[in-house]
Length: 324
Image 1 (cartoon, one colour):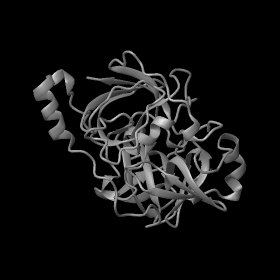
Image 2: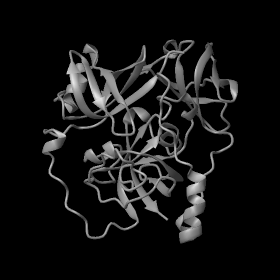
Image 3: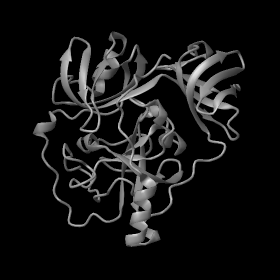
Image 4: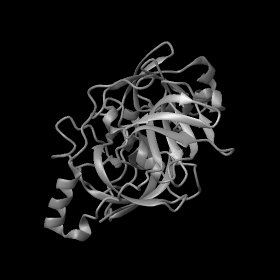
């Protein structure tokens, strides 16, 4: 398979056991059931087995499935491409129209790297993605360097980095910046003021990450990684969480939160499945639609981001997160 490397990925929280415990202690209202995955699921993930002018074959966790093309079907392979951009053996994400049989849009070998630049050697950066992830290399191809430099001009250690691209031989090749980099390294950022009252509802932007990096079995995982986990237990001994520029309530793994896409009106109840400590560094504003404010409030799994109406190549959407 041409795509992401495997082995050593994070294990998601036992969200069902956590929800039962929270409901027993605080009541059912504090622990809503996560939204069930629709049947048929409009999001599919797998490896291309066959391509014809009107149909693509994909090996998914359900077996080999066929998806029809229509005139409006679009394809992304680092940029907008035609049918020739689909190749046997490629990892693909398919967003379907109702019924799962007609492909609305297909993303080929899409990847994302978010974090703090740890080192640089030529056109290759090493990115610290936070304490729950490994350091990951990313290549800035010459053809993408101009576009990347507009929003990420300082490709030096200590500066934030967030880019979308494609897997090439186990390494991400960046093609689109997914953040506007602040003009200073993370250690020079002034800590935000401590809010007096956080409340149970916050507004900001959500990004996405791919839980299948390291473990392909997690490719369909639905949930959210959260930047303000309780440091005494769920964030872990190696917790590197910093205070976010957006006031956030402390949560635990397994907590169910309601995410509303302020751009499309889509909504879902999602479990917190991982820590997104590095997200707290990002105080940028999402330009997908006019609503929202500065700061990221969560990273959704790729499947959840798509199910809530997001476009992965856009990188984000504005959202409202409600606890309980």
